[in-house]
Length: 301
Image 1 (tube, rainbow, N blue to C red):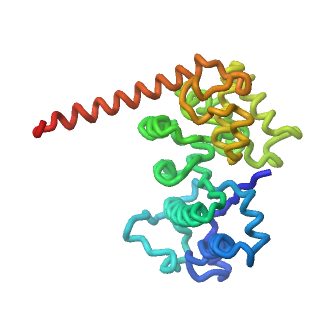
Image 2 (image 1 turned 45 degrees about the horizontal axis):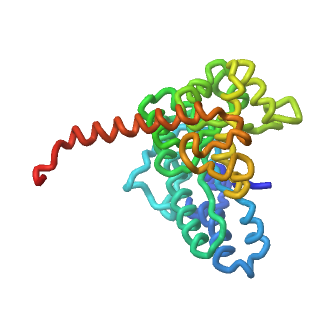
Image 3 (image 1 turned 90 degrees about the vertical axis):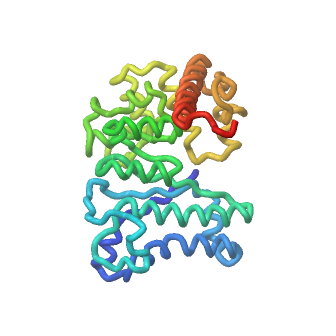
């Protein structure tokens, strides 16, 4: 078993109940015990052992909540954020990212496992949420609003940012199933996977992930190769260890194209992997060529 720690963006609720004085207390409550367990594991044995099974952090709440504050270098520091209003999404993500990166560097120096930052992002709300996550996150969940911004969608494709999508959850809350962009993202080559979200609330069987795959396959008429590619993406972007990923999808899974595909384990056709790799290389080559043409020849040559 591996664990993701979800941090709800509810500073305003704590503040209204006078439980905290400023936003810095939120960060302190979350991260100070983790730093202490990293520096002195023998004094915090329970937390130290638990962190071995933690793969990352998530940021959750209703993204459609509007904030009047625009995060910038002029924004108050966490210890100076004493207002009753909730900080904006970008504020939360930046300070979570900053703390996770420092914690990761410290743990890496000490030979301990590190954490990913995998927030819920793009399910609703402003498109700036996806911009912020592109700059700070390792993976994102949902990403529905990428369909509203072709440029951002292209950036997520070029960087192959993993996107875990949950069509059944979205169908109940924000977007009906038939309009979900997962199939479109898959066809374009974005790194998408299927996942559950609140399975006790939105699913009807004891196998909620199988439910997601079965409904997606039937509704969008996904081929076996499509389903296996989604499943392979899921393993690649998961919090499983390197050794576990080698076991499930092959020893060379980090290599690009067919060289990284063990068809006996993934059941993904090599021609599909070759197509994905060649298409991405062509796009990157096109961009490099455009930059060189725009810059022009070096006058010293």
